Every structure is written in C-alpha cells, then in structure tokens.
Length: 478
Image 1 (cartoon, one colour):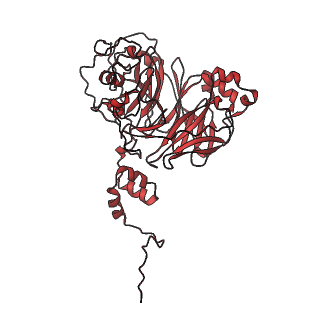
Image 2 (cartoon, one colour):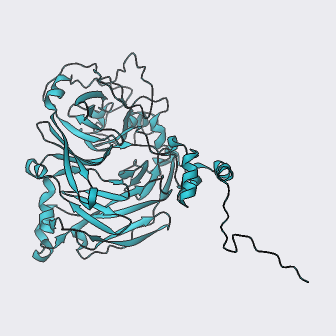
Image 3 (cartoon, helix red, strand yellow):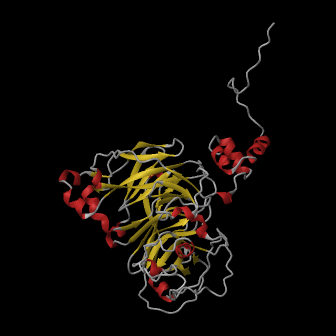
C-alpha cells in the first residue's frame, strides 16, 4: 500500500499562525527596510512590529533635522540647523550630478530632482526614473507645464510614487496666442489625467482623477492669478495637496480630487501664501508686506472642507525689537555648503559673479564665528525658548517671508530681508531669532541675493532605493 505524503499546510490553504513571540523573534532579525515592507502585509504583523518596537522610530522621518534653503545663484542648496559634528556637505558627495542638485520636490526624507532622480540624503542612495511618456491632455502642450511631486510614507509602504501635476502657463506669450475656446475651458479639467510613476511597478502609468465639487474657474482665470505668491506642496494622510491660487486635494486611493478655495481675505490682500502640514494637519499661512500674519487650519471633518482661522498677529513690532545685523549668532547655523565645496573641490569651475574671487583672499563681515558655541545637536529638541541673538543694530526696513512649517509643532519658520532665520511660535506669539542665514561670501557667488525655495527636512533611514554611490570628484567632470 502506497503511502501518500501530505502537502504542507500552506499549500492546502490552511493558515499557519505562529505565536507572537516566535513571529517577533523572526522579524527582529530583519533589516529596517524589510520591516517597513512587512508592516503592510497584514494587521497582525503591523501590530507585532509596532507593539514590540522592532522598527526604531529614529529611522523614520519623525524628527526635524533642519531646513534646506535654495539660494539664488548658488550651485548647491544650503542647510540651516543646529550645529552637528557631521559636515552636512558630506551628504552631497554621492549626488550623480555635474552642476549640483536641483530639487523639484520632497517628501518624508526623499528628494525629487528636476533630472528625475529620487535621492535620499540620509542613506546616500538614489534611483533614476525612466523618461516621461509623451504628453497626453485635451489642452495644447504649450499651454501647460508639469511639476513633479513625490509621495513617500515609509510607515505605510517602502515604495514611493511621483505625480506629474499640470499647471496653467501664465506667461504673456501663452496668454496672447490662446484661442477663446481654450481660455473658457474649465480648470482643472475633470477627469484630470496624470502621469504617475510607481516604484513598486517600476513604470509610468496614466491615472484618472474625477473632480468632486466645482472647478476653480476657467483657464483664462487661472492665467490671471500669477500675482499670487504661493508656495508649498505636500502629502498628508493619503492625499496630495497641490498649492496654486487654490488648494487641490488629490485623494490617491479613490481617484478623486477637490478644489479648496482660500479664505476670501487671501484673495483681497494678495499676501505671500504658504501651505504645509504641521501639528493639527493642513495649515495655510498668509503674510502681507506690512507684517500681518494669519494662520488657518483646514477642517476636513464630515466630508467638508473649511478653513478655520487659528491665529493672527502683526509681526512688524516683534521684528523691530530684534536686532538686524547680518552678523547674528543663534542656536542654529547655516552650513555654508557652497563655500566649503568651492574651496575644497570646485575652484575654477563655477560661474561666479565675481570672476576674481578666491576664498583665501576675500573676507566678509560674517566670516568670524562665535567664540563660544556650546549648542548640542538634538534633531527633535525643538521646544524652542525665547532667545536673544547677539548682533549689531542696523536699519529697521526689514520684512519676513516663509521658510516652512515645523512638521510636528505649531512653529512657523521665516527669513528676513536681512538674511536672518526666525521661528514664530503660534501658541506663545513669540518671534525667536535662530541665527544668520547669509551664505559666506554670497556677494562673490551671485549678483542677486534672495531665497528661491526652502523646506523643513525630516531624514528617513528606511528606503528601497538601490545601493548607489558616486563621489563628488566625479560630479564636476564636465
């Protein structure tokens, strides 16, 4: 009599349940990237990983490290933070570029570059996306421009997605040659067809998003809104928030989007506008030229969207009480990445405003460092207290612009026209001077001095990017 071997339980469709202690011991031996992926397998595994704290919180983008700032005319973005024993310029040594990283977007520690590279400065890994497919839209291609936005949440999945979002081109040439039918078309259209790259599928695909509710207006109306100075695009809780002259909320899971208009005060005063995520969710900040700050929080309860005014204050008197010298010593410092990389790696290869510049022969007022600097680096130690900066008195014609929201605390980071960094605390209404923002020898690098873009940086040590590294010596070989 022939004895038949029984198939394994899993092959017979019988679920094998391991004791939690055994499962935890197996999972404990896996690297962080694998743990992040396994959290998404089922509820029981996620509960085991979280309850046993197998995936360390310090590996996730849950703490603020500092603020990346892109200065006009400089080759690399700079970094504004508390002092650290590790040179921040080292994070750029692996960037596979010849002219420096040109950052298009960021999300939870990953950068998306204009060259369609996805980069993690913390792990020093990067991936190159395939070329975009041919443009497909009902509107003429010249009438639009695309901006890539990256979505990455390692607590949910180790994979990322890149969305190419169309914006109406408001340049005068496009306005003049547009025909009447095109101008009267609704914007954004419905359905909204987006090109999306998925790192899980490793390809671009078209996704359709249907609008819920009214449109923002017509294409012609969108062209007229170029006067609004708006910044801030971000991902939060399964939705992508795109900032234009309105806020577009793209729900990734169900293929829908909504148009959320700003409070009427924003359209009347035409202030500097910034949206971002912070302690309570989605925040909208507006700042007028005379220093009047208004902060709203988006209420998304009951399927409705309503801006709730949370804070108002005139920051001008607070700013006038602070000293306004370029030479400011505070708890944060600018790392002067461009100066150090130019001095060490790139002499003779930069297109400088001052062709006679040599860092060994030029000195700026901000060259001197403070004689005592005992600030320790704590990436999440940002319960900032009121701090007085040491500086020299200068003129009072100063102004503030946004650098970004603290992602986890009700703090707004700002810069002044005299290149200082500030933190404004919504709960205490205090304006704190953080330190000097003026890049070392900036006047020799660029003709104009201003900040192009900035964003708070939360490093992430978990990703699925390839193990790739290129030294900075190879970057600058034209």
